[in-house]
Image (cartoon, rainbow, N blue to C red; front, top):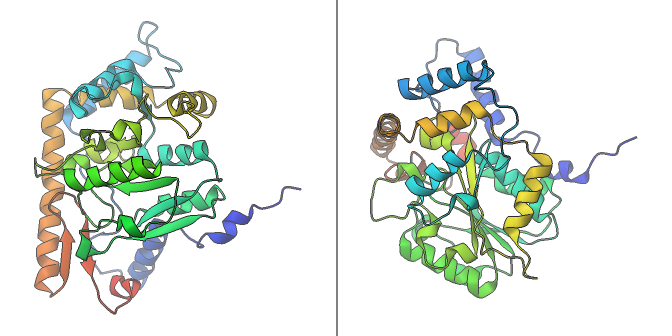
Length: 346
């Protein structure tokens, strides 16, 4: 009989977002007349725009014809989509060959954790997105360091206090604090990683929300980053694809293990083994959003969510809270000194 893995004993009974949903539903059962504004998960609420809807409809019809039918695609993703991402997102600093299309950043993070296994030491921003730590626990990793990133330090890790690690998770714009690192701060991280032989797993899922043109939208704007960083990103946030599922990861050719072996080569091999590629429909939709009309639809959605963030921030401030974020990311970090956050939530 199969024995349960010990790692499940180290997880909380419920993942964060289902727990939020459970509490919300319980409250509504007791207070059916209540009207709630959900602040709990980075989901989207606006329907698809006409450009995306048309692209998905056309692709569906094409798949119903002999001429337009596509079965399994390239596990690395459609070249046309990778070319669009390389030119539009990375300004050709990254080649299409270094981009791998996926079914979302969260899924890619899980597969990257599989790639690197459990015999590594990892560092996590604290606070940070729960998948980083819980996915690591599921891999059986027991050398996990939570690195304090206090608001007094712009939610940036104090590099001098980081113990020896192999892999560092960085999310900017940050979920959940809304903080965005500057070029100077990312340069510090890249230089530190090179000096300490650390690999950075950079989550840029909210980069499209950056309003300040002086702030970097990708770690690959930083000199030397291609030698030490992997970047994951997502159409869920970029274009409102949360249910459609589409994302990508960037694995630079320069990246190598301690022994000099190619990380790019192993990532391609792993994907070919356990992943059959993102949905053809999703990828066709992804290609469409890079058209002029598609980019206009994206900007409309970003403006909508950022307006919500600004209004919520104003409301919290009016209640006397100190609030961070909401300027270059749709997240707010509300300080509740000497109080339990779950109590405040309730």
